[in-house]
Picture 1 (cartoon, rainbow, N blue to C red):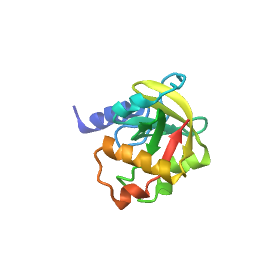
Picture 2: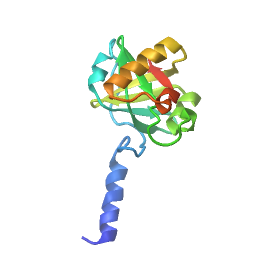
Picture 3: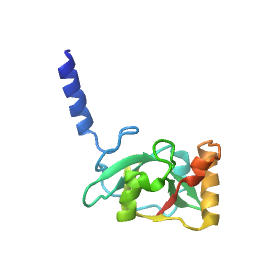
Picture 4: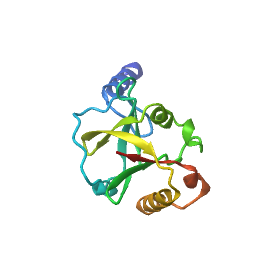
Amino acid sequence: MNKPALVTILILTLGACTGPLGPISGGHLAGASTPPPPDWSFVNAVEVIQLETLPASKPHSVNVWAGSVDGKLYIPTSLIRGSSDPIERDWVKNVIANPQVRIRINGKVYALRAERVEDAATIDIVRTSLQLKYELDVDDHFKAGWIFRLV
């Protein structure tokens, strides 16, 4: 197969995908909305979830880490790649502008609202939980990230 044909097939394949592909952001997350569970503890066994921001106007989706503490669902800004300032991330800007989000976990889609966690004690508990789940070293980069609770 020649190179132009291969590139065309690749572009068409990527265009047919919904949601993010690895570190590359995507658009609308395919799937019907499912009612949220009363307890999100099962998320602690899931490595990565997909988060869609601006679902009603200009869907933008990314892969994010997630964790549950006391059955509640949290996502960090992580800050592994790119800027160390959370507000420089497109998905964070979108959530600040409109907290309505959709997430996809194990093929199920949930419509939720993102709330930035401001309470220092909750932030510490959630960061410790995420640190243990993802086997992270605590450093200033990790501490600079924000935590959102999805409700």
